[in-house]
Length: 348
Ligand code: SF4
Image 1: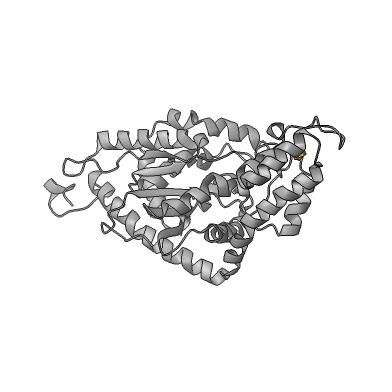
Image 2 (image 1 turned 30 degrees about the horizontal axis):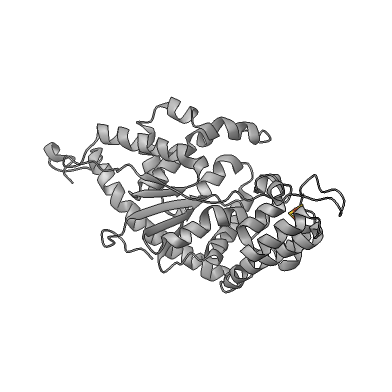
């Protein structure tokens, strides 16, 4: 667990995920693998954003709590280590909400309306009424999630850099208005770009829960093999005797990420000469995936729900201590601290 307060000298990073349920290989390769590595170099805070889930799932929040547990167990399965990282729940650190409220006072409405995901998501989730204040304000809540830990870096994929840019703009605006003893309180965090392959789902589109094309970290070997059997392939390979091209096949893309060089060479040779069939090729891909997934599943099975909840409580307590330290400075800089000496309201 990160050392609270000022005791850690490593640069700090913060990242999180919404509790959308069991995580898939795309989440693993796109974020978790990198987060696990960051634990060696950084003071790490990784959270589950249950309030964010509420911005779109407010009408039926029944799945948020069970999904939170699933995400936490997948964090642990992937190798996030509660002894080295604070694994916490957003709603257990009320300071996030306080900072979001205060930053809301200085954030122009237009900054929120122009966030690309605002209009995209409203279009994509047309079955939900997202004209609520919480949904419009969620990038600001996200900015607060970040700034409250005063991190130097935010590890994100390419598609999330706009959120970090908004966070930097909000910090800049805050620092222009308010200072504490002449210094800035909210440093602008840098993006730490996560190099990650884009994994295809079983239908060939990007692997995503909303497409229903995922391979879950918890899928047993039999399920993985079954899902691979129905995975789309190079459309030019209709008959067994047709040649194909792994570069035009989603199964080929999986091989490139997960298979050994030796297997990959057999895939290229066999596919381009029609020397192998797709069933055989998919079997090799499934072998590689099962090899990745089984150790994760074994690690996940080592945690009971009760242990996971305790880990989340401990991590949230550590995060609260760090967040309160920032809020102390924020309140003082905004002169929200009562003092018996009217001339020194910001001196706390
Ligand atoms: S042999 Fe493999 S790479 Fe080639 S089309 Fe079939 S599944 Fe795809």
